[in-house]
Image (cartoon, rainbow, N blue to C red):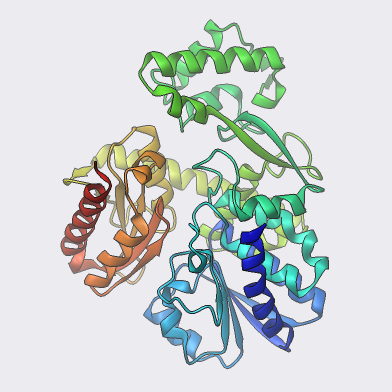
Length: 461
């Protein structure tokens, strides 16, 4: 509660600035967390009768900064902005963000890092935006469930297998809409056929089982688990408690036999979050699946569809979103296949691949994350894709919780590396990105590799 009170003092100050406006330009990131943050800001502004517009950005680079500086309106940056705070000084703005800030000033920004807390686990961009919105009007408590969706979409529950810190306080505001239970943490509990859930299981992977359809089906058959009910595929939510226990016990046994250890094995089960108002067995019921739908919309250029769904619109927008999800899945599957084909390049402290134009820059980070988990890589992964301007590379990096515990901080590595070569970079310890000139790729990689090496050396005994 003390942490919440510290944040609230800053939130109240910035909320008062918003309430003085007649019109607000909301500038948001395109991922699930940014979409949820934009939805919260939109809902809060609507409740006050303040006119607004929403602009979504992949990142704030030189081109985006030029466009922003042409605006004369009040700007509310959500889930981005802290990394370019010093570049915005001539504008009338506030920031609700959780990424690593370049400025320690709290005059115009609310950010957990300014109070000594890790923005990758304590609170998401949507959560920070929610705290400001709640200080605009208590009615905005109704938006708390969207903030939780943003936290899940940003994988804030990943390190602890549950939401912690300020996220926990926000969750208490959302319990009228969100149900919290303990279950397996694998993606697709609500909608994937059971054998697909096993096939694509990660964090932890199931050695000798995950990855192939045939081994996943054999795994279930050996346990005597029926994976069809007539002509209908059974899902995890269709199993009874004894069937679930049988599967979990077998996975635990395999993990221990393969030397994964207690710490890794415990990641199999954790908290899962579902929306009480949504129908069980649909993509909107489980917060993890819902947030993936939002991310698909954002990554494929239609974040406004996701915002409409967040704020309760269904039917037309949901059908559009499902089509985008299918496109998203296809792009990711093709990307993973390409990485398997081209392979990885090894450096002392990182591995990397360059997809060029063969993987969409909007999904290359997701592909990198999936490849990292599926192959149990021991080093952080850095992925490159050619940006649309053909002169810059989009860089995405991913690490595991074990790497973070050993000292890896990708946010600093990406930021330092990009800055050295005239680019932009930032993010979180576990997932960060950058844009760099195409002819500076080698210099960037060298800088990142050296930075990660220093981080690991500092943490070593």
